[in-house]
Every structure is written in structure tokens, then in C-alpha cells.
Length: 156
Image (cartoon, rainbow, N blue to C red; front, side, top):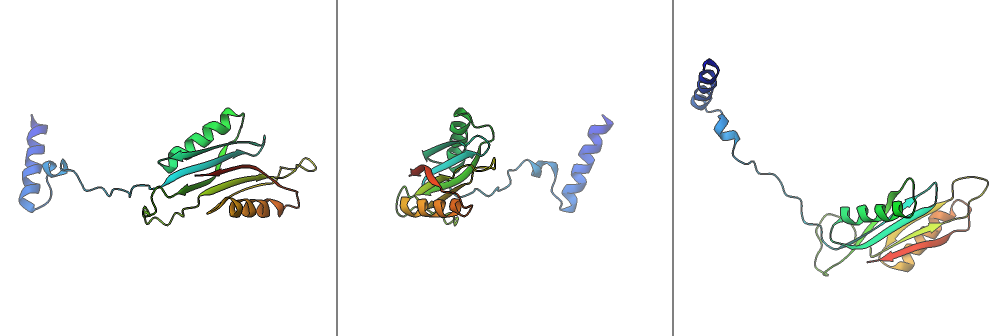
């Protein structure tokens, strides 16, 4: 009983001093709500050690596209799958969500030839068009000196 009366006394003291009381703590604080993710999301996942990949397009959320691309990569036998490209397309032309995340409609995974037991060169890029994404991925992959080819492309 002594404990309860002490809590009541502290509550009255706080109320008389203008400080919030325990009852005030139960009110919901305004938590900022993130803006909705707009667009149609896609992702490409890749596992470097075994050159396995997975992709997904058509998701409503970024995380959904990433999760499913990873699952597809792992299902294909990828031992160390990571998401290497995330991109999106407009669902409606006026759906910019002001996050600064670009609306790149296409993503490409380019893979080179393995040489001298080194890690196989690769690159993943996204761009507004398939051709631009292919050019970027092939150029970045080719910096290793390897002859690279498009392994997968996805456009939303």
C-alpha cells in the first residue's frame, strides 16, 4: 500500500508543477508517417561465388521487390545472394513521391568471363531504358578487361 500511495503522491506533485503526469503518457504521440512508396518496384539479386541471380518486378513496395529477388536467387542455388539493383517505374505519370529515388524503368545484370581463378566480373545498373541500362552495366563490367554479356534484364 505504501508503494501505491507514493506513486499517487508523485502523480499529484507532477500535476501541480505543470509537468506531464503518468496519465499524459498514455496519449498517443504523433509519429511521422513516411510518404507512400509510389510506382512499380523491381530488384535484381546476385550471388558472386556461384554466379546465381534472381529478380522480381511488379511489386508495390521496394522491400517486397528486394525480398522476392533474394528468394529467387537463393532458390536458384545462390549461397551469398545480395540485392544489387533496385528500380521502379511510374504507375501513373503524376505519382512522384518526392523522395528523390529515380524512376528508372529497367535494370540489367552483366557478367564477364572468369579468368585465372579470380572472381567473375559483374555489374548491375538501372536506367530509364533497357538500352541505357545495358550500356551502363556492360561498360562497368568491362572495366575489368573481361568480355561481358547481359545475363538478365528486367523492365517494369
